[in-house]
Image: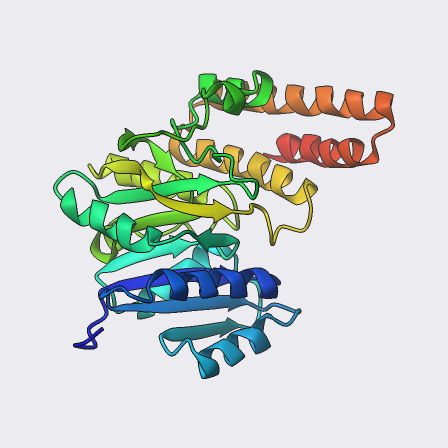
Length: 302
């Protein structure tokens, strides 16, 4: 950063993930150590109750001079926190990274390079995500039309590559995981940013659906590689499932709001929940029983 100009703003949302967020920030610093990219890191903490704030303040004082902190006094959710960060971002380019990601090698520089080399065709770009055991993590896919929702709920769609996948070449897709999204600030702002009525989950699907409608193109590159732990701040498995149920119904009300479509979506969601609930009762699995009893209630209220 010889001229001090900030080109890239890296945005991270923190919520009760102190050690994981620290690992993420350390990996960013290491990845960009020899890079000429002028960058800043903006971390928005959503009122963490662990050691997150203290950890972030220590990092800022010690070696992360590019770090900016926004400390909320309540958990405002993923979408609103990201929008907060964008408001103060100085970079022309925005990289949204989950706090539970680890940057491998020069992944950030590679991601930005691919973006710049294809700027006429690419407006949103995602990198290749890996699980902790280094297996590819499905992190791109088609929009959730009713057949895709059916595949996700009943056909193990991710396993067969019907609903989510991880391409091995530069590929245009409908959506990329919110764990790693690179775009220009102007594009993000033109489509209105993240929908703040979505607290968590389906926010990137909604964002990129609106991007597609605006004529922007979404791509995936396998050249930029990241570890993504997944659901690190969601507090167990029940919460993500319920948020996905909420996300599906909200997304359909917003974008596909036709009576028959809504009926079919709710029918599939309820059928999935009732099957899982029955399995939970037969196997005496308290987690399944409690989770899908709540899911059925959500469907009824939707």
